[in-house]
Image 1: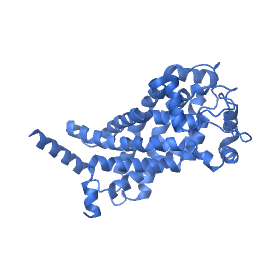
Image 2: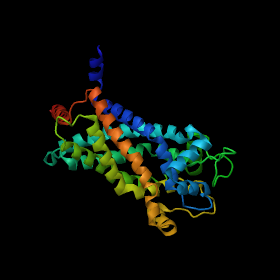
Image 3: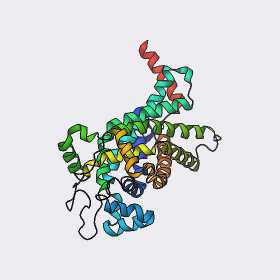
Length: 334
């Protein structure tokens, strides 16, 4: 069997899983240094005494923060927690894109009057985002805890609430200790704001991307620059509306790294209120500028690589896939 025959033999959902996983892994690896800084900026002021090192990161700015991490931890410091991040994003992106396509076909099949417009993209994107989060959230929590650790230059130890002892020795150690401390509930700490945020974010991201592409002339629609531009704007707009919930989620995830005498965040609303009371509403947008720098290339690269991989894997156009799905279901019912 030749190469094209092998590709054609792969089921449609498997092609979408492969394309989505590759897109997520490539995009996440490219923006990993900015992701590390973004997480540090988000949780920077919750407890001043415990966050002394992180306050320094917040005050010295973006370029100085890059230089500090490079000096104290080396190049690999920018990728602290990236192993867990990639391990999470590959299955997450694979499920996200595949579920989006599946939900989109199912909605179009079950509700033909809705057509194939932007509303379908909004609904399918929201549902697929929630599905992917529920399956991969523990990996996201581990990635956040590992990235949250800051290494002190002289002793190469973690500073902050955990003292001079390294908080976690790696992905497996972080999983194990988190599970022993709080069980499955601990592995899903902060999942509520994640779901609150992902439903509108994922929906808006797909909505804006598909809407912008639909307004591009057909002879330009396949150009990579056009895909990158559409993906950049889509990620930018979607992230702006949902960023405060991302800050709440991060602080809920890392609260067990705080000093034992510090205040405890209780629930999504309680955490949101505490952040505003103690740090001001501006903290809800802490790190947003660096998040823009991360989201623009991340979403743009993700959508572009996904479309390129779909073309390489010979995934049929959505309209054709919907017709095939409808035909297959009609034949099975008959």
